[in-house]
Image (cartoon, rainbow, N blue to C red; front, top):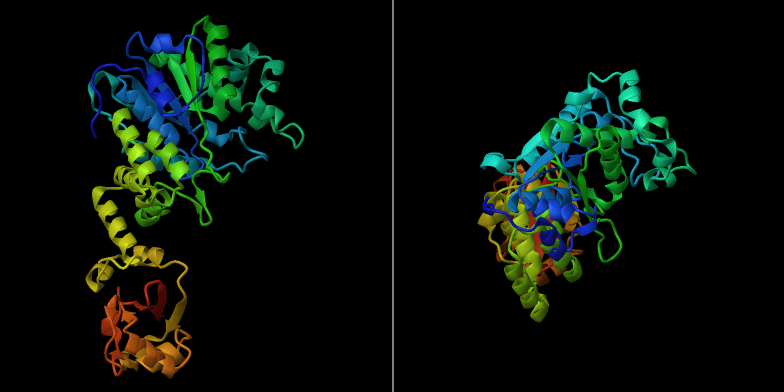
Length: 432
């Protein structure tokens, strides 16, 4: 992955990419003086980051490309408390073992994006559990709690929105913990900037306030816009749930499809945030897409770049090949190259029929498979019509022999048969 050499204006980079929401006065001037160190916190409530987290990952990546030093903080300590920001109800707390596992998994994912060996502005990952684990409750109250008033904490949006339904002291105190993280990193690591989504502004500014009240220091803050899809639904979610970076949770094929299926409006928003291409290149691409939107150039460019970065070039090639299957641009050979999980992802929602393996071992004729073991075709007459039209395929190969016998040798992945009638009607048989 290539990184820019020298300094460039990070705030301006966020502006033209449509990412900048809030900025503390003096922040841009401070950044323009030279390399600075900034951080973003990640909440380890799952063992994988989702595409919603990628906005902040990309913020760190753009920050590093502009010549600054990024730190990703994984909240091993704050994750044990739970951030109330954006939450309408109290969250279930994870135990220490689960949090430790989640932190380790997220750290490995972060290391795929940022450059950890590029000199002075090499990225780092820190865990706030390292400096919070030995902090006693009384010690925290004396050293930190006395500097922030209840009225200051009550004024935060994350607290105000929860007053009616109720908020525990645990979640109420979260902003103090996050604020102390900023203070600790400023005091011990020279961190001058905290970044995060706009829903984190209250927590971030508590950190600024602690630095000022405890030491008389000055630190800075930037918040990025929360992405909202044009149709009003939440970014990073589909009908099937969250889109994750872990291929075990979301396959590279589904990940690729998520970006490929973005609306034109959303694709223009997303590509500015998630692409590493420069402004001139992206503006040219956006113009080309506007001239010929049916070619979906934005969606394709976005899906290809992000899938290759999150997964690999090889996974991207497989995802493209899998996508082509549904549009008739594939052969039996390409179908057989799919692993079973991707195969099922591609044909998710296709009518499925279960058949005993023993039926195939002895050989099954077309009428028994398509008319008796399933309702793919309503009658033998309809089967004859489909064969005359040459519209029937098995595993992407045209069926021309009415007396064809289907056996276990025809199974894909030793388990699946894929029948197709016409261009869009698929039927999946699963041997058991």
